[in-house]
Image (cartoon, rainbow, N blue to C red):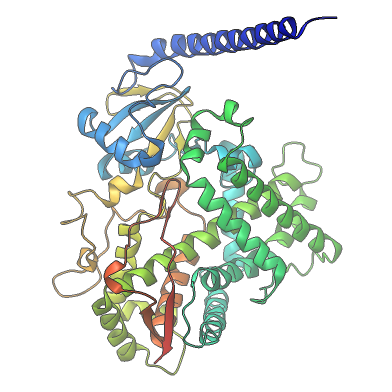
Amino acid sequence: MLQPATLALGANVTVYLLLFMFCLLLLWAWTRHGESSRRESSRLPPGPAPLPLIGNLHQIRPSNFLKSLKTLSEKYGPVFTVHLGFRRAVVLWGYDAVKEALVDQGEAFSGRGTVATFGSVLKDHGVNFSEGTRWKELRRFSVLTMGNLGVGKRSIKEKIREEAQHLIDELKSTGELPFDPAFHISNAVANVTCSVLFGNRFDYQDKEFHDLLRMMNVLFVESSSSFAQLYTMFTNIMDHLPGPHQKACQALRNIQTFCKRRVEINQKTFDPSDPRDFIDHFLIKMEKEKDNPSTEYFMKNLVCTILGLFIGGSETVSITIRHALLFFLKYPEIEEKILAEIDCVIGRARIPAIEDKSNMPYTDAVIHEIQRFTDLVPLGVPHRVLEDTSFRGFLLPKGTEIYPILSSVHRDPTQFKDPETFDPGHFLDENGKFKKSNAFMPFSAGKRNCTGESMAKMELFIYITAILQSFKLVLHGDPKDIDVRPRMNGFLHIPVNYELKVIPR
């Protein structure tokens, strides 16, 4: 029988051998990566020299990714290269560089880069995280179908107004007691998206709906953590490690399961002569192209498309409204100016309509400034060049990942007179009229701008004005303690948790 010391020695040898093999594997991977990088480095924009295995991680803090990139831009200019672990990316900093890529050369830059949390589940399916022919076909179908279902027409406007009334009634039920508004707002915004995609809204007390919104909150909170940044840098390794990134992936899988169930419900009652929602329209297209071997209309693309549209059209708008209410609590004088405009244009007897916006330039400017200042998606969603691309004297090889930093656009001093200050005047001319800015890109820009942008703009205006029309907002706590800085600084800028009271006017 082997002695304990002998067994321990054997175990140690095994551990050392495994560590040795692991180091050899990393060295081999880095060598291959380095050879490829050296062949292409002379053609890429400048940037800091990477270290083996970690790239530029010693210069880029996942906990403050944006600030780290800003520091590098000050040294290397508006277009520079960074190595995120084994992943190499070209960063675009400032309005001119981002606009030149996404708008002027939009076709070449229309590929989709890697966001590990979403990519691990969607796997290049659906409209949001695919590229090339698949993305073009699904985007064209999505825009056309949402238009046919009323986005941009009277029907969707009325659905938003009806949901705004439900929201007002729900807020009244709080009885002037302090509460966290996040859940109520998420209900209202998600219900409009559900009406378009699934053909019905949910009662605010529906348990399945509650669970769905909770999963969406988990998804975005964990996707904005430092672990999620590391997950994108070291995907193959962190796929096998525990952490918050795994919670985000599981939440996304749960939402995907919900979407599958909704499709199955539609299939049981499907009538191609009377399509009720986005799912029905996709099922009709699937039937028409069932004999086409290269069709993009199949079940995986259907589920991933409605999943992406649901996520993109729900929680992002909800988070923006939560930011807005926090700004009104901090700056009550802005709230009062909006209310004066509401009283003049709308009055108190009816729910606001999107047609009112053209007569409310100050309100419109405030909403734009909230979106600019809060930088909901500060880093933008990564792009990828689809072909070898000449850009500002550099040659970006096909497949190069691109980080168009939207925060750098919204903070560009050449575009906004005082970008670090919250000032609705950024969107007003000398006569107090609303002033557009090409550097306003909360929905990104170019060919891959947000599919649901028009609906999101309607929701922001109607919900925000309806809330201020109906209630006086009162902070539960000391107003001087209000901190409008986000508590999460990753994929999304998520506001701090707060409680308020709403007093009927």
